[in-house]
Length: 222
Ligand code: C5P
Image (cartoon, rainbow, N blue to C red; front, side, top):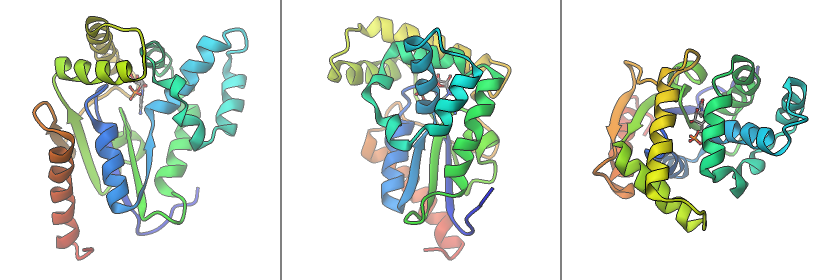
């Protein structure tokens, strides 16, 4: 595997709808990093399962992953709650995690040349995908706030859901992601805990930026 030298790598783990995507994108823009929302890869596989159940087997998934392009991950169909729940189920499987592993590693360690580095968010990024990341964050918020944020996002996409349905599915997903045997969501010792319950997007961005800049200055990189 090709690894670019001297690039900046940010790893973020978080439960659903805690704001990791928003903050990851903002940091990536600021530091010119390639951003990858790894949940979208599992959502993409969940989409295949729900839409092509008869074809859905290891060979088929592998073929699709090999052809997968970053732009495919911005498909709005991947955003539904149904896909999120299915993603949480299929992501428990070792064979599936193995298949998406190299896709993630490639972008983490060899982002396109125009970027100064990479920023990935997911559930196992800090300890499985980029264990040597320069910055590691565990971003969380209480379940009610997360459900409210996700509910508003889904409503903006004109999805038919109630707040309580979203809350219920977020809690179910938390339970499954935290307790599964393979690659569970966890805060590693070397990750910084950021609770966004009472932080707006701007405040959250500034908080992380301050932490990152401080280390960059100490290391003489800024
Ligand atoms: O982050 P998002 O809600 O889009 O992720 C959908 C599901 O994909 C999660 O609930 C989780 O089960 C799974 N996932 C994972 N590992 C990652 C990212 C997401 O298992 N690195």
